[in-house]
Length: 232
Image (cartoon, rainbow, N blue to C red; front, side, top):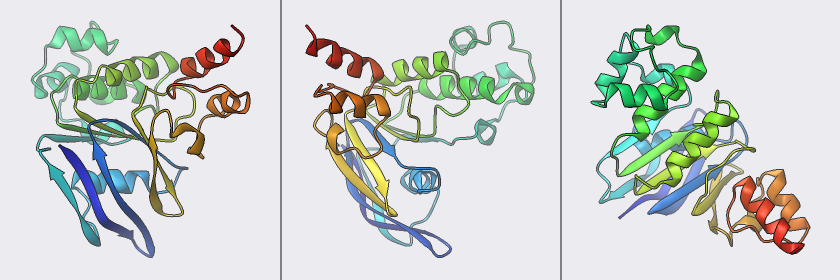
């Protein structure tokens, strides 16, 4: 089973993004600077933005969800408990995971953006999906919550996860790395072999490589372990 961008071209005015590649089972990280087209590509892969040419092939992937950067776009429940129930999830469990225990009767849109993001991602990642597409999932979250979301992603509940982000500090273990470069999606390869070719790699990974260390994945702890091994 896989998700394929086949000779895809997506346009916004005079600007055009091209993509041609296959997203197989695993965790895919797609990086690029702000304004490079990550949100545009995420929307096209999710089927909510019509491509100018090419097509998206969802082979065996029928249950797909997209999390957009701003959680306000996803809210449907007036109260926190209403939002949880709209996902058909256990109220107490989600409240605890999202750090909102005792706030089930809080109006959803009175939550801070960070709290709302925690609630949204906790609900979404608690569901069962063939494909999860996350657009800037770490925006608005503190380090603790970023780490919690990374742990959830790493548990591999969903067969295929595609993360679009410019996050440089807290990242989950990944299987594949992609970059958007010069308006084109570029496949860097499978982790860890793709790490040296990753132009947008976090500084801690670049430093480890400069020191001759070979991290086995992209998390900061992977870089630390690789550096420590050099001195054993």
